[in-house]
Amino acid sequence: MLEFIGTIAGNILSLPGILGFSLGLLTRRPALAAVFGGLVGLLEAMIFSGFSLAAAGGLELAVSVAVGVVAGVLGCLVRRKGAMV
Amino acid sequence: MADPNDTRGALRRIWDWFWTPSSVLSVGFVLIAGFMAGILFWGGFNWSVAASNSEEFCVSCHSMETNLGEYRETVHYNNHSGVRAVCSDCHVPKEWNHKMKAKAIAVKDIFYEITGSIDTAEKYEARRTKMAMAVWKKMKASDSRECRNCHAFEYMDFTMQEVRAGSEHQRAIDQGMTCIDCHQGIAHKLPPNYLEEYEKVARALAPGTRPEAHQSARIDAQAIRSFLSDAR
Image (tube, rainbow over all chains, first blue to last red):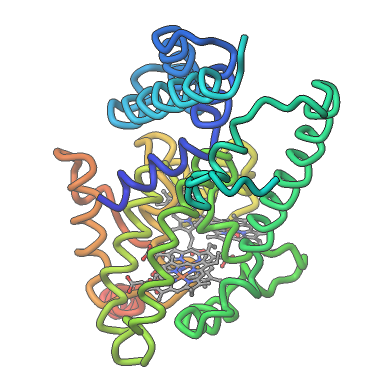
């Protein structure tokens, strides 16, 4: 449980959370934002496991992709609410 | 500004103001101001994370003093070359995402400090096994990543090490063992039955490993004594 919450928090404060959110700001389309965020999550998991899917670990990967998707969509919502373009 | 017909609550008004397009600030101004604020914020964040890695910070909690005392007796505190490993070198990862995860998990310790889970020597000893197992589990799972920030088998000159160390390290490479498999108690006192407890951790992480592969690097006085008396 603790491990799980820690993994989520760690991802929010690293690439998936921050870059995912920033990329989400670039679009008004939630689906695209989610894809951006998910890709960042995937990228992060790959970078920190030395580019081997086996080493990434299922949970680790799932959490970083999920956090990326949520951050991307959140960024997209901010874009819709806060910009006229 | 104050419109008598405005029936919105204070929070609502702040919310609406926050999302109102700016007509007095240029895009450039907003971007530059945001950029500067970002640097300030990030610098401050980074600085606090770095500050929370200092030995002073760790032992600012009474609960951590037992470990400080034990660690002060070991080579990682005091040695001939003066190169040290502080608490965070072994307990906090260097890679950003692992570091953030460790910091987030450590927030639980504030709660334990307040409730005083280990605030007396008796309580500490009662909980030592459990805490040591948490640390072992982390190190075993990460292949002793924190140790390897400073130590690497690749650069060890086995001919310069004691005979036992050199041959054990060769065995470790051959069998894919990790530092914590043998150096369980490198910085603090070990809990009783630590070998058995360590086995539990290792087996839970990798079912099917041979238990005899794990062995302590501790000097086993009893074994040496019986070896000597047998030899005689």
